[in-house]
Image 1 (cartoon, protein in one colour):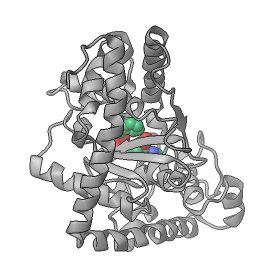
Image 2 (tube, helix red, strand yellow):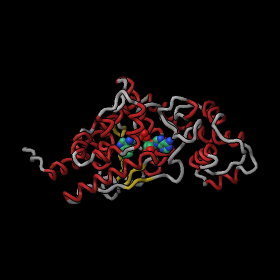
Image 3 (cartoon, protein in one colour):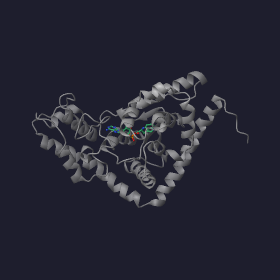
Length: 335
Ligand code: TYM
């Protein structure tokens, strides 16, 4: 708790272009929860370098991502939006937690397996211990709740295991976090191959809607989305994965249930439905584009947010870190 509020932590990587999956699986829920909780939303730049990055590009993308958090509707005066690299406690706690995490646990992480297959020439130790840094992110702020998409649930389960293990040795040090999944949109699939998740790193640009896409591009991509030969608009992931993904997207964007969506498009064809999905998505992204452009023009304001929120994150994260250091037996600082 901070004051009388429960704590929320979440983060996103500033690599590639953000997709509609990131928006519906995470960012949209972040906005909705941001009044109720004391929130820490990090741009996780430490995580980004597990894959090679161009330095100038990474800096630019990190700043754009922070502005996108604000453009999406998170108030940076009330919520802590910050760069992970500006709070050094993340690395320090990650090291300690490394010593409480088993190789076998990390070996089981599906994201590690996927990423090492994709980057076979650079399977570095950071890629392997990535979930421990993520655990440190969450536990440093004593987060009660962590809104994520489905693909992060395994990492969250590991975070809980590490925290429970640590608490069982040293007493109640960490709050055990709960995942938060939205009602719809927790796993948005590729528009070109609905058996794969929509991903920033997909090589086919038609597979993903990027948050920067304009209306024409969005509508064109939905028109080309893979569906099936039967023309019914019915939610059935097994037999109609493409259409079900579109229903999921439309439902998440309009806050309608799958049944409501099916009813709305009863007797209509895929053409009408795809157009409606495209328009609904373009409509929610349009204000985000406008706000993002305004924020980009206000360097001083963004700099102020970065400075103040970086200090706030540093303060809260160090508080937990000091407690942990003491528990494991590091000598006290002499002042
Ligand atoms: P990242 O940057 O890959 O994704 C950010 C968020 O977007 C969600 N997401 C999706 N949701 C629905 N459908 C999709 N197709 C889709 N693709 C991505 C992700 O689940 C995530 O919530 N390791 C994390 C970042 C991280 C983090 C943390 C998250 C670092 N530390 C602590 C929570 C708490 C990652 O790489 O997310």
